[in-house]
Length: 356
Image (tube, one colour):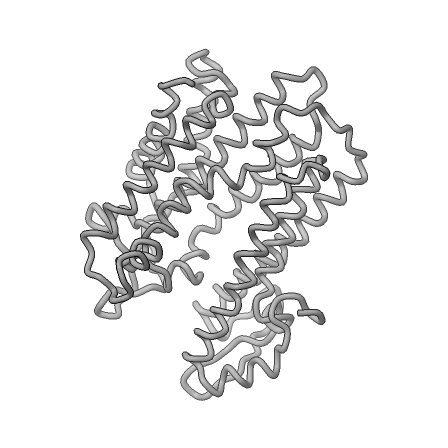
């Protein structure tokens, strides 16, 4: 047990926050609104904060100030400390806010404040949480992979591919940071344990669960065709998830704009419209299928299919997204009424076209 390891996530989160405050940012409007119905404003610089943080970590390791596998050697202390930070964050954000009427436990888990922003709007709670979670996940992955490389003379190419694909996932997520201002959690969810603890603990530590359990294993010598197949599965899922989200983003910003040459086709009641062309004509939650596909591709890329822990990440997405699509449908049915019934008739499949 390394007592200094308990300070590691606190230091990392502090560095990420400082960089978020000092690095130049884009100032944009989002889809969520304030209590007067005005669009909220955001400072977005995740595409710069992420490489800056990773660069500072690599520089410190190169200079001999930190071991390359620091995040591995203090993983348990770091996880414990992050758990405590997540609980403290939840209490600090939820308890001072007015109750929602759902009860204290529900408020603690789901949250009370809708879109808290701090320091005069310079820091949006939700976007800060996602930035911290994504960056810490990257640090964990690189530290775990470094330990694997330092331990074995012939490190697994699957570990390298797994980390490379995950790096692509994180970089493109932060590159398209503005698109996420139009997603469900940004305009519909409140800030509490689910988002706070989820982004400070679950996101950066659980998403690395596969490498957590295989970094100390020798290379399985996965055949190259299997690695290629894993990359194809990953990018197939990414195409569905990112394509669907970008099409929705384009439509919300300009309902007449084409996306990838696909003209928008809608169902409308005169006041509201639902997109039924392109990705959103395949299934009502085609992006969820893409998320699961990426997770499966990451697991296959690692090359240890018999290690059951490596399947926890894609299993998590199944358990998360299948119930969520039922909640999404109920929310949309209440919001759109008969228009939603027309959409369900037009697009009958929930997630997997032709199957479910």
